[in-house]
Length: 238
Image (cartoon, rainbow, N blue to C red; front, top):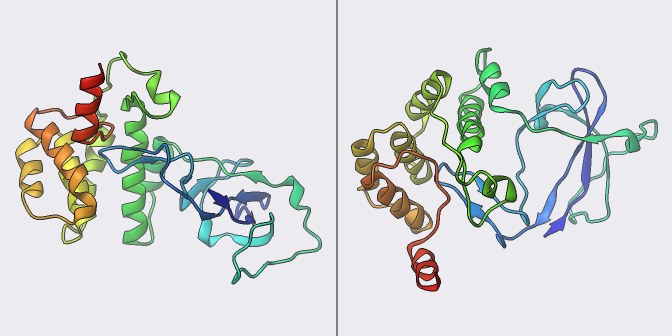
């Protein structure tokens, strides 16, 4: 993993400075994938579009913030630095990630594009699922939950998942896979299987096969994706 420059942006509400990390390269070493499309990769950190100001807690879209400057050594050849001699960049702090409650709150307001609505609904679904994730291979925060009961979906989560099903374009293979997973987690296993019955791009075949297996078992929970070959290897070594 090679970090890029750290961009310094100004909060549109309190005007304080926020750090946005960038990455020139990354890899999937140690990564864990989940059936809802979430991805934990220590060597390829998440790059969200919506963040929370660490000072005033306001939610904001990173691409809409004014860029004040940057710091860091690694810069791509086409990088154009923005210098503000009056700005003290040392006081900038990293942004915070929104919670499921934050996403739901923003969805109650007017969202000015279909793309933003889809992003918010997808992130709200995954953020809600974080408390249901269990892992033998992934981050410690999920390993520590093993053995604890899984929480059912709230009314707000169910409503959001149904809205997300309606707005995802199923002509796109990734979206079709997400729709299948949404149906599975809602307990509509036959609908899930019908979406998975169509041919899908090779990139998604392992995930599709895993979700199909869960649907046939009538398992509605978000799961860590473990390919069949890896599971068989673990069983032989057990």
